[in-house]
Image (cartoon, rainbow, N blue to C red; front, side):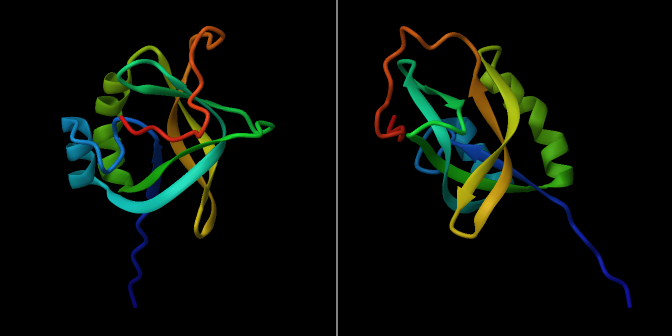
Length: 129
């Protein structure tokens, strides 16, 4: 009996890559990965104008809300450089524990790097574009 195991990589998105977004990168993501559903992590979400920036903070009293996508390992290897380029130098890709309906899942996400002192906070932690 042969068994096959496929490894999956999870990506948490909270801004222009959300499933409701009309951005071409979001459309591309929907074609290449499977949407698992809503999720959140503790932290703060900032308004950067036409997109948001999230900061992970396990001690935060607020959450950043978004969605989790699942990639096969082979598709993730093909797509991660494209996603890194899209997110740019303002962000760092990091693994954070994300709360889903099924429990905590370690997900890649893009966290905002620059100082946030002068940025407006999105108090509800949800980006609506």
